Length: 142
Image (tube, rainbow, N blue to C red):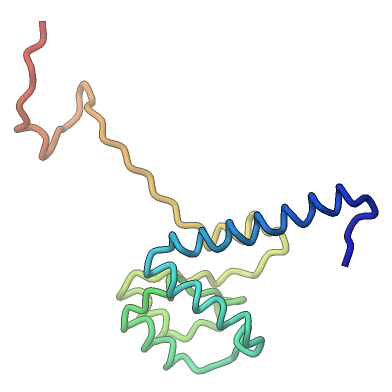
């Protein structure tokens, strides 16, 4: 099927599609084993629409949380009243995040529930406690 009337433009579109396909294959080859498992789970969910939103008892989720399933990094509930106390307790024991606020229609704010951010800073401070680095050998000043 032609997407453009101009043959040169159609050739450019086909080249872009081939390039995108090749990039996708290259990206898959670079995935870590954990990313491959996560991608397989996402692919399975996309293929089985009934898995996109489900109602279930808290027991299977508690078992997954307690087992340390690396695919479960957080849980999203549309309302705090829907979180079973036993599930909340299991999540608290393993440090799992539960978002239980109302779902927002503003994607930029809603997606903050799913963002994992980490910051690392190794600094010397003029008046700070060096902690474990206090015993390091330093060159003389002056």
